[in-house]
Image (cartoon, rainbow, N blue to C red; front, top):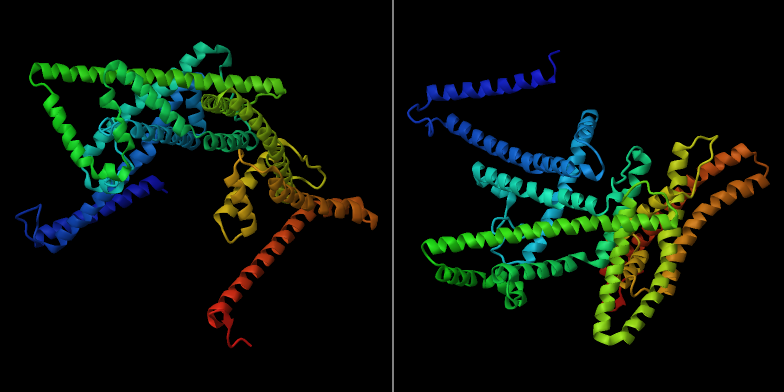
Amino acid sequence: YYGDAITLLMGYATLILVVLMVAVCSLLFGGRERWLAPQSIMMRQLITILRYALILAKVGILLAIELVAFPTGCGWWLDMCSLTLVDATVADRLAFLKANFFTSHFLHWLAGVAFMLHVSVFVAVLREVVRPEVLWFLRNPADAEEHPLRDLIDEPVPKHVRRILLSLLLYIPLTGALVYLPIVIARLLAPGLFPMWIDLHDPFSEIPSPLFLVHVSLPLAMEKLKPRDSFKHLLHAWLELAGRIMGMRDKILPNAVQRLVPSHQAENESQPAGAEQEQENREEEPSGPGGRRGSVWIWTKAMTITAMGFSTLAVVAAFCIVGPVGVGRKLFSLVGLDVKHDVYPFASGFCLLGIVLEGISRLKTIAESSGARGAYEAVIKATQQACKCAVAGSIILLLSPLLVGVLVDLVIGVPIRVLPNQTPILGTAHHWLIGLLVMKLGVKLIVSSPTLAPRWRAILVDATNQGWRNMRLWWLMRKLAIPIVLMVSTLLGLPYIFSWGLLPWLGVDEVSCWLWWRWSYPATFVSFLVFALWRRVGQLLGQLHDSLRDSLYLVGRRLHNLS
């Protein structure tokens, strides 16, 4: 009658009243001399319960702030900084918030978490390049002495508040430097590319496509191109240049001896080295007004290098927006495809530029080591390998996913979404995307489970170890591509031949043929799964029988007492 909120408040008020009554009774019948340390057993238990309740409330509030409130606020600030990217306004975001409150907050929380993860990866790479004392104000998650959950319990609230405020002061300018300034610079460099097209009006058919494309193309590019090592080298070169310009190279980057020391030896020698470095700094640091002026000058140089770093990141991020999108749109226009989302051109342009840059880098390295003839032979070999990859990719990444997607739609989608008097449309891009996702999940499942399909697991592991560069085309076609195509084609062809070839010859009418065709695919697929499961269970039982027989009767190399 009064609503859930009033009922909840009344419940909390009742609990508080009970706690106060217990406290009063304890004070009346116990020692009243010292409130902080009463002699009453009941009061001591009450204080212990209250202490644990306050610790639990403290941990819950801090977790809510750090895991929910802060990422959501970061996502909203990220959205505000990127409004000009899609030519949106604050009123549009507020209207979407009013119409979809929880969805809006979830999307902003997801964007904030993704941005924070990228920042943490950047800080981890930066920590591997610079000296350990440069990032003294940031926590190191890889440190064995760091215990975040224990720190939430043990450390006082003001320290957590200072840490949250420090994170806030770091993320506000960092978001502006990495998101807002690159968009402004990109609009100045290529105003014709803006606004970006990201249309999400039909989520059931439009959201999966860019998500699948990014889910497949970008991780493949990241895995093969290895941008972490390249980014680390570029970051080290930039810090080397900036440190030499500002005269702070030795204070920012470790020397060559420190970079070559193994990690375990560095950990063992970290304490003496740190004490020695601190003693040297103490001896070199001048005292008095000159020392204070030197300290101010060092901080000025550090702030200058930080400003130079933010400016460089903004310019590089702007080119990372303009380059892939421009190349991707040009590629789509040459092929003759319509651009509905700029996620497609960005992913395609990013992969193409990454492949070109990787090829140029490798060609330059080969030319420096082997000369022009070695570079020519490398180009010929790379061309042959690219042709092999094109042949294998056209079957494994194009034909096989399309067939698997059509099979999945015929098994699951057609009986559910297509009416008996309708004809399904097969062979579209969505079937290819669904098949690609199903194949990727199947590969992950088979590789992670040694007992599920040992033969296929061995083939997939061998193919993964070969990679695209050392691929054996005929072996891959014979062991992987052709068996997959034949198996899926059989599952597609047998129900069709039975429904439209055998049944009409037996005199079955067309309506019954349609019903048989509609439900024969799920029945065939279920029968195939039952047969495969029965066969695998038989193999496992046979292996179990052999292991029990060997453990009971096998002595040395001869069987005894086996009737």
